[in-house]
Each structure stands twice: as structure tokens, then as C-alpha cells.
Length: 171
Image (cartoon, rainbow, N blue to C red):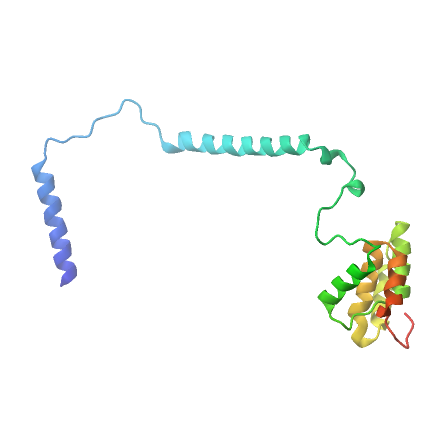
């Protein structure tokens, strides 16, 4: 009932307004262009201009032309291999107080990484499977520490501080 009254009222108002102003006629414009004819080229030009500006800023940046190994990484996660206390604090914060390092594994991968040698994945997986059941994650941590930080001294000093994994198996 309410909807039919609303529709009837709206129809009546529309009819009255249409009858009261019969002299209003839309003016015919001289030139009618579709919106797409202007809009698409403007969008394309904006994209091309932004890509040009992005490439120009990249080309003008002096850090672009330095080798990747010489670029300074501005990250809070960068670890100084000389600061063993900081490394130990971060490892404990992430993995808990029971974290340990396989010193031999860490040192071996640090030496391999310094010589730019590739990791033997078959060797890595087989030794990972030989790691004690509760210490597999620490085995991978030892590999990553050695490979990324490339400091056999850090591995030795972490083990010296009491973070060496005590295991009856030798990996």
C-alpha cells in the first residue's frame, strides 16, 4: 500500500512538472565529443608521464650505478658480525632462550660463503635429516648464520658464549 502511494505520488509530480513547462527545450551544442575520446588519451599520457618520471629518478640516483655488494643496506635487520651480544640477543628474541648453534655447520657454511662456493643441496638435506629431532630448526639456523653473515668467528664466539648445541651425534 505504501509503495503504490509513493509511485502514484511521484508519477503525478512528474506529470505536473512536464505539463507546466512545455517551452523548455535543450539547446543543441555545436560539437559533441564522447567522453572516452578525451578521457582515455589523458589516462594513457598520465601513465606514460609517471613511468618516465620514475625511470628518470632511478637513472639520476647515484646509488643505481654502484655494485650491489658495495651498496649500504639501511635496515634494522643488518647484523654486525663483531657484535656477538647483539646477534645472540636477536636470536634469543626470535627463537627463545633454548636456542643453540651447530658450530661446525655454521663455520663450514661461513667458509663456503666467503669463497662463493655453492651449497650442495643433497648434502644439506641429508644432514638436516640426520639432525636430532628437536634441533632441526637450529641446524637450519646454523646454516643461515654461516651463509648470510659469512663469519666463522661469529660462529665460534656464539658457541663460546654457551650457545653451542650439545648433541651426541656429529653432523
